[in-house]
Every structure is written in structure tokens, then in C-alpha cells.
Image (cartoon, rainbow, N blue to C red; front, side, top):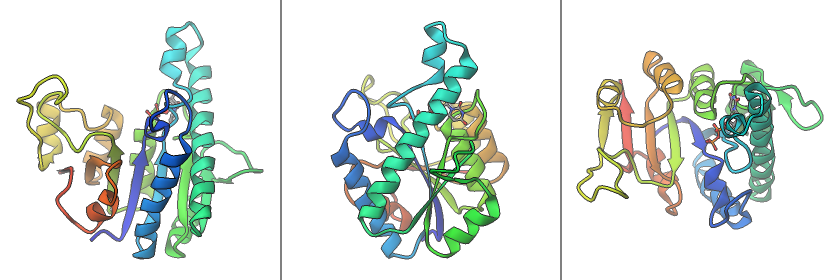
Length: 234
Ligand code: UDP
């Protein structure tokens, strides 16, 4: 069982059946899943993406200045973070939102020691606005914050149930890995996280579990140590 976890959710996961934005039913389901961990007294930090609202790279492809687009992407993560915060509070969970970009009316600034204190007091801490810097992703933010608050593991909740040898939707012979080393994942070109995030985890010995967050009860099972998804370790 893990004691302190960092849960990474992609922005796209929040879309549910929708093409854009936030699906309230999905959000409420995630909040219930997180409540199960909260009730087990697991310390929970969360980083959420913004891809359901805005992505800097795509804006840059359309001709926008990349840095501008990335800051807009970081603001998108704040919208998702606030939505998740509201959904968690509805479940009776105590939360704090910390932002990497100062927005003092809606979030605390990111302060590592304060974040750790919140976790110790069993408040769910959501880290918004990614790393606060353009040219990064929220996977990198998840890796960075996990290292900073000394989380035991990064739980990467996705729509697939782990890491496969090939794209399972295209190749019926693709096989799922239960365990992988960072070395193997790298040499086989497997997609765990972007390389910046991947390297941070590898160099700082933070295990990553990629699992299907959309299957009810999975989140708790993963934290309790059931072999679900793919575990990547040094
Ligand atoms: N972003 C950024 N720096 C960060 C984190 C995010 O510039 O540290 C921007 C970037 O433009 C990215 C967008 O925010 O495309 C949304 O984040 P991400 O793509 O990681 O979201 P996800 O894919 O998890 O939904």
C-alpha cells in the first residue's frame, strides 16, 4: 500500500463522452474514486492537464506564439483544477489548490513545505498551472511535484489499462506489460510519459503506474497494491 501518492489526470480524461471541456458526470465519478482513497487515509496530491480546453503546441501550429499558447494551456489546467476541487469538496473532502502561477484570489502559491503540511493534515492538494513554465507538460509537472513532496508513486490515470508493446487498437498482437524498468521502456521506445517527465522520474527513482482510471474502483485497487496497469520502476 502506498502512503502518499501523486495522481496525474489528463485534461482529456475529464471530457468523458464530450468532444471538449468538462463532463460533470465524469468529474463526479473521479471525485468518488478519490474519496475512497481519502477514506483510507492515503495522502493525495493531484496534477491535472488542460488538453480538454487548450494545448500550446496546437495553438502554435495555428500560428500563435508558442509561449503565449503554453500560458493559455496552463490557465486551462487551472480551470480543470478548480472544477475538480469543487467536485471533491462536494464529497466532503478537504482540499487546497496551489498554483505555479500566482492567482491569489483563487489559489495558494505553490510552496513545497506548505503542500507537505497540507498532505500531512490529510488535505487533498491539487497543483495547478503545471510547472509555471512554457515548453513543459503537466506530466513534467506531475514528476516534479511528486519529487518535491516525496510521493511514493505517480499514478497516471488514463483511458488505457497499461503500457502495451504496440498500439492495442491497431495491433491485435500487442501485449501488455505488468512491470517495466525505465531502461526497457526507453530502449523499446514505449510511451510512458514525455521524455522530460520520464527522465525526472527515472533519475529520482519515482515509480510510475499507468492504469485505466475509467474503470470503477481501479484507483483504490492500484493504491492497495493490486497488480493493475503497468508499473514502471528503476
Ligand atoms: N503547459 C505548459 N507548462 C506546463 C504544463 C502545461 O506550458 O508546465 C501547457 C502546454 O501548452 C500544454 C497545456 O498546458 O499543452 C496543457 O497541458 P497538457 O498538454 O500537459 O495536458 P494533458 O495532455 O494532460 O491534458
